[in-house]
Image 1 (cartoon, rainbow, N blue to C red):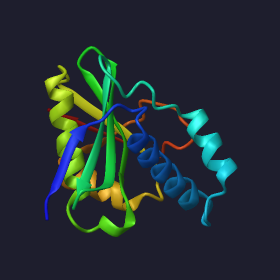
Image 2: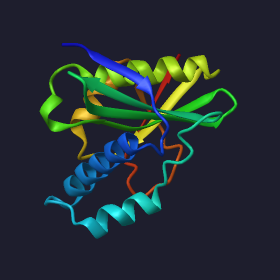
Image 3: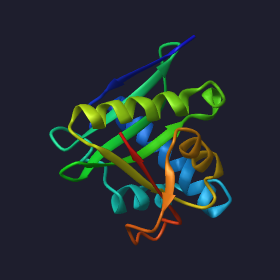
Image 4: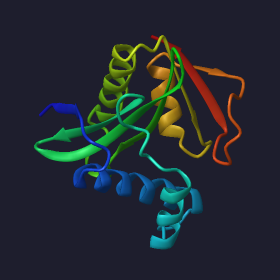
Length: 158
């Protein structure tokens, strides 16, 4: 069974459900317990995803066996610099190559939109994500943002 990854309007019901799954997971991991609905809603409000849409971005849904299994987003941070965000594989599909497939698809979309460099920031507790980015050729760099959840910064030339 292979991953099928395609752009999806960020406001569609499937995209909203994928973002809800993403935030529920990362908020819970941050607190070390299941996330409460109010915490997830606050995180989604603090970090809106509406810029993951053309012309300055794209939102990707990954499907496996016909089900939405993950997502990734790209937004532009400068004329030739894209930012990778919202990379998430739902638990039933972890370990199936989805993370790498989603990142590869996001990189291809960023390059198609004119990016020469893609960057991201992530938290220390997201060790699987950091390992994935390193395996895909991202290198850790000095901080380029000051977000409260930014502990590690990565860059890759496309």
